[in-house]
Image (cartoon, rainbow, N blue to C red; front, side, top):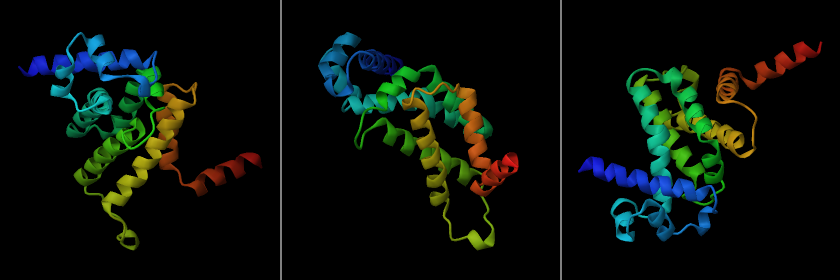
Length: 192
């Protein structure tokens, strides 16, 4: 029974995905999605509330569930690489999806999903801060890293970047391991 539910969700998600390649998200109707999946309209509502929930389901299935497996298996170093590879493999879909605005946008879905993953990693490893920074909460730290990650992904996807997923991983790792002062000092040294 669960396999049939999952298959139906995949058909509906595939239909939405196909439609998004030719039609703006705002113009896509539930009927268009169900017609593309070859199911009746009530079937859609057995699985999803609306098309935004389908979009979230796609991101969860395609990216977040795989990230969670890495976290559970102590492979946190691979999270950014997997994230960029999964997005890079479906770049045109994500480019169309990021054009959706509002509270149920892919940007918001990515941000909240990645926040939960980041928080899980931080809590799992019981991050210890120096005494002078003990006023920072794990939630604040998770928000800081999630906001920067979501922002750089957004720019990469929407700006028709020529960067490969591996180049994105390198760029993110560079930005998160260097302070702004270190980057400035490197530039100053190079210009001398």
